[in-house]
Image (cartoon, rainbow, N blue to C red; front, top):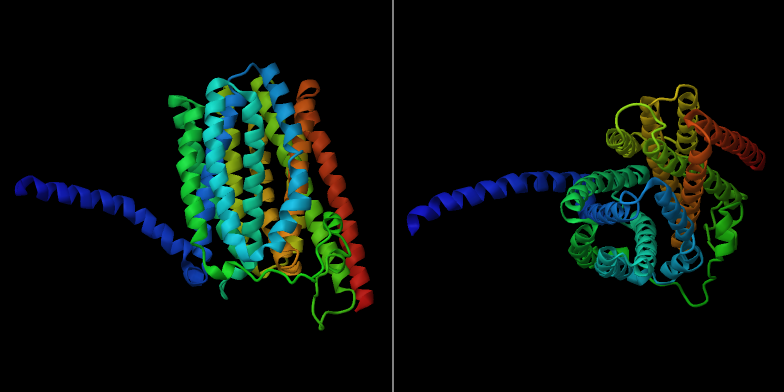
Length: 460
C-alpha cells in the first residue's frame, strides 16, 4: 500500500505544479503595483472570469442563431436580433445607472446579483436552444445582455475606489481590459470546441457554474467598494441631462465640483466627455459594420481568398489581436491626454478603412479589422478614464449607463448598415460608405474640440 502511494503523490505534485505555476504567475501580474492591497487585483480576476462567461454565451448563441441556418435566413434572424437588442437598453440609461447611484452601499451585492442571475438565465437558455424555443431564448438572451452591461457599469464606477497610488486610471482600465480579453479568447476557444462536440446548449450549461462562482467572489470584493448612500435631500441625477453628456452635465445632475472649481469648468468637462463619447460611438458604428458586412461577404462568396472557414478565422484572429494590442497600449498612454488618445484612435480607424476601400482583399479586410479592434479597445479605455476622472461619484454610474446604451445603439446601427449593404454593394463600395461616415465624424469632433479650447482660453 505504501509503495504505489509514493509515485502517485509525486505525479499529483507535478500536476499541481504545472497547473499552479501559470496561476501564480497570473496572480503576480494582477496584484502588481499595490493592486493586492486596494482590491484591484480581485476585480481584475473577477472581470476576467465574467468575460469568459460572456464569451461562452456569445459562442453558444452564434452557433444556435447563425451558423446552423442558410445565409438568407441567417440575415433575417440577425436583423431581428440586432433590432431587439436596442430595446432593453432603454432600461440601462434611465433606470440601471440611477439605481446604482442611489444604492452605492450595496455595489458588491448588485454586481453579485447580475452574475448569479446570468447563471440562472444560462440554464434556461440551454433548454431553449435544445428545444428551439425562440420565445424563451430571445428574452433570456436580452436579459443576459442587460445584466452584462449592468456589471460593466458597476465595475467602471468603482474603479477609482480601488486605484493604487502608483497606477493611473487609463493603466488600471487597460489592465482590466487586457486580462478580460485574454480570458474571453480562452473562453471562446473552449466554447467553440465544446459546441462542435456537444452542441451550443452544453456551452450554456458550462457557463452556469462559472457565473455562479463569480457571484460568490463578487461579494468578497473589499468593503470600501461600497460607498455611503446619498442623503435623502441630495439632488437626484437627471438622466435626460446625462443623455446629452454635454456642457451642463455636472450642474444639471447636481454634482458639486467643489469651491475651488474654475468658472466654466463644468461646461469644459461636459464637452470633453461629449467629444470622447462621439468618437467612441463612431468607432462602434465601424465595428458593428465590419462584423456583419465582412461576415456576409464571406458567406456569400464575394470575398476572394481562402475558404469561408479560414477567412472567418483570419478576420476573428485579426480582431482579437487588435483588441489585445489596444489594451496593451493603454498603459503607454498613462502620461498622455486621454482626450487626444480618443481622437487619435478615430483618426487611425478612418485612415485604415479608407485604405482598405481602395485596395480590398481578404488581407486588407483583416488589417482594417485589426486596426478597428485596436481603436475600439484603446478609445474605450481613454473614454472610461475621462468619465472616471471628470464625472462625480454622485452620477458616475448614470453616466456609464448612458454611455453603454449609446455605444450599444451605435454598434447595432453599424451592424444593420453592414447587413443591408452586404446585399447590394461590393466590398470597396461598402467600406467607402463607412469611410465617409468616419471622416465626417472626425472632422466634426476636431471642429468642436478647437471651439472648446478657444472658449476655454477666453474664459481663463
